[in-house]
Length: 104
Image 1 (cartoon, rainbow, N blue to C red):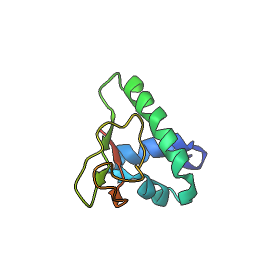
Image 2 (image 1 turned 60 degrees about the vertical axis):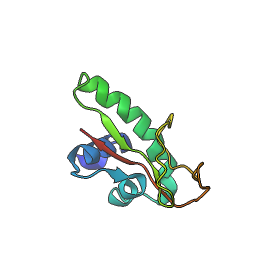
Image 3 (image 1 turned 90 degrees about the vertical axis):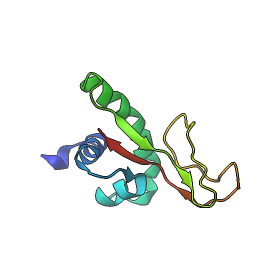
Image 4 (image 1 turned 30 degrees about the vertical axis):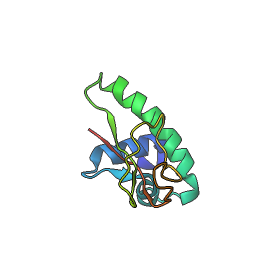
């Protein structure tokens, strides 16, 4: 049955069952997706957030631990959609922890 699930369904199941928030790279690794599918996973997360909210009537939601600069600690709070920023606006470092996701 699981082999017939869509990518979004697989991601939703994974994020619902995990104990710790997962990055997109971790999601790709667990679902055996090539890292070249990162953009597709980020795009799916946007739709999953809406679906989860609608299906659970607001009881569940997709939560994001925002990306953070490893160099200066800057936290990217104002993201319009989930993504890993390329560099820190404060110190210009490219050492950024990616956002992590979980469904609660």
